[in-house]
Length: 76
Ligand SMILES: [Zn+2]
Image (cartoon, rainbow, N blue to C red):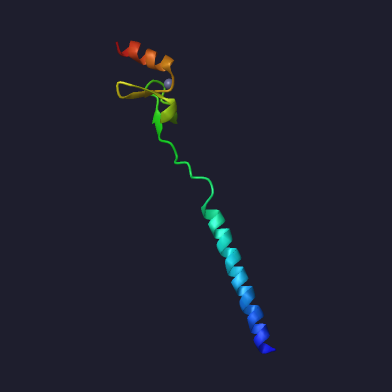
């Protein structure tokens, strides 16, 4: 009778371990983490924004084409 109890206990532990491992692998696999995008400052107004949304001209970033034109006309 003691032996049966041990077997039941063993099975319970085995089942719990399997469940825990399945939960962990489900946690690991989900959507790929998006890397935080680099932020740049508009050379005209100084607003911070993602580099993909800014305009790069002559090594300077601008938040919009209007500010790029403003800065270029201001600089001559
Ligand atoms: Zn700007």
